[in-house]
Image (cartoon, rainbow, N blue to C red):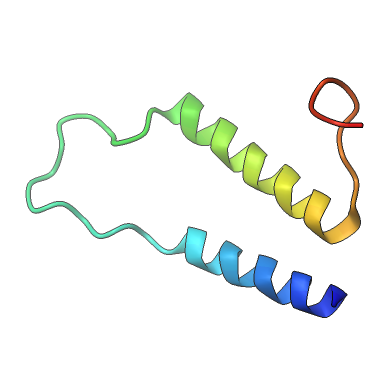
Length: 63
């Protein structure tokens, strides 16, 4: 069961690492602002840590 969780997390990481299909015309601004992208990456990392180890950060979103 743990192996299945690890394999599914690895598959999601590979899928998230794939670049999205490029639009036909390049946008004048990035699709996702850099600070938002950083927060999303932190969230994905914390989600993977939680899924693989069961650890949650302390505070209102943790235990």
